[in-house]
Length: 617
Image (cartoon, rainbow, N blue to C red; front, side, top):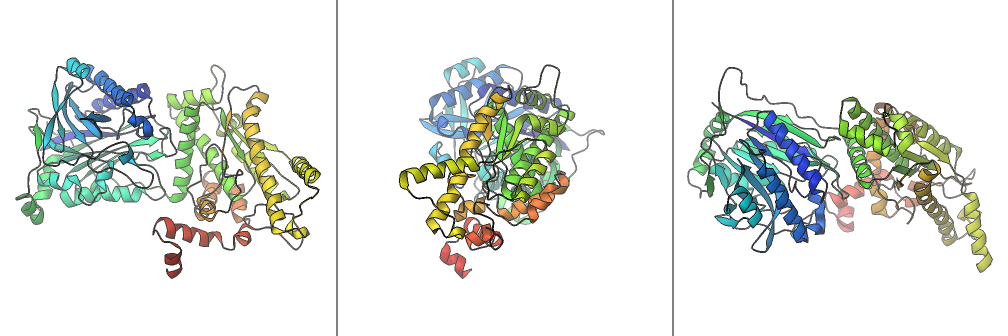
């Protein structure tokens, strides 16, 4: 029996923060070695961070990545463990997204990415080129300082696999998992038993199922071991990478990491029986026949053993039941982790949210409350990094640290209800109760005097004063009066975010949170420079229907009971006067229900329908 202990990981990397990224890579290798692993893989472009964008075009980025790799190879990190490390590499004036395989302070092979991600949120072709030569490995001349440091001149570069004395391994990189002509097919036919996928896959509602199914199917069809590593956290852009590193064997999942976590480094290991792979493949006659006459893939031979021999106390890792979060949990935990990462990296002192008492802003408030709960849980578990970040952001004195999520929220979360004569007592009271449940520092700020000042100024230089539709005004007047209220709220929110820390003798500034959902964005049902204007918007890609389900879930599981009343209330902007015979409602204004709007969103985004296709469907 050939037994191989392998390790994969989730890393929370920061774009262009080479010192932090290098520290995380080293820590993951140390943890992998401590677990007894002899193979370790990290996320895609882990030394630079995935979200560097046009910084990838700068020569310095590749140079600093080489400096980080040199640091790793100069120590004992790669002693007796094969490490795949992700970084950009320039070869013959072409920039490639690469995995670099290192062992015993040497570089064994460099594998450039073959299939680049270039749709949706990704545009790798802007920065990288795909490696198109699938039939050869070429010599790559190492940079002089690297060559001198490790006493190695060249290294095989290209598509191929590594053949050890007792096991063969090869790489796939992120997008290659999902391509129709996946590299692993030819590699499996060439005898490769272990596939190592370095990924940078972002979180999206209900996306994990697709990823897990693809990993299991990859090993179910071809047999083998699939090691999947991913980024976790916000690396500087608007995406949240949701981790969930995992290890699959012959169609079964044997190890699964967390999908939502505040940890910077998470390492997952498993003990694999490689003879089970050989047996699995040998039992499939079609696999045997196809493998017997395909063109072989080039390889790098390494005269070294990685496997352990069997003894009584060694038991291969058993299959596990895969853990999936429901969509409501994904809405709670994904944006919460992203907000915490964004907050600690921005060096802001907290968040400010215009809280209207409606579904959207209440959802954002609940997500921030969930963030505070997650932070407290990790502190209670002994995570010193989370504790240190919480103490710094909350500006605790020496020896003090957060012990209650509501007390933490009071320090880093302002909510403000900016009411007018058009606001109802119901929304005002809902906003206040929710703020009390979360623990935010809440303000109730009437803005009628500011609105009146604007209207008086307008009347002074035009001679006219606009009226609402219900008072006999035109459609133009009605919209203008609504927009004034909404935009005043935006200006006041940013002023408070800048100055309220100063009022409370705190340093720094607060980030303004938006609360416009994806359906309203698609429909155009929003006021420019109102809730659509903020530093960041945690629900900008979530539909109204999903948010309503989240509110029902959060009322119970986050223990914010007022959210049940928020969810049950009819959506309204409250920008027009309330009359006994008239009450402004969003769905009436739009001419459609939010349920219908969600259907339009799915037809457009998922099924790629235009107006005619939607109508015909």
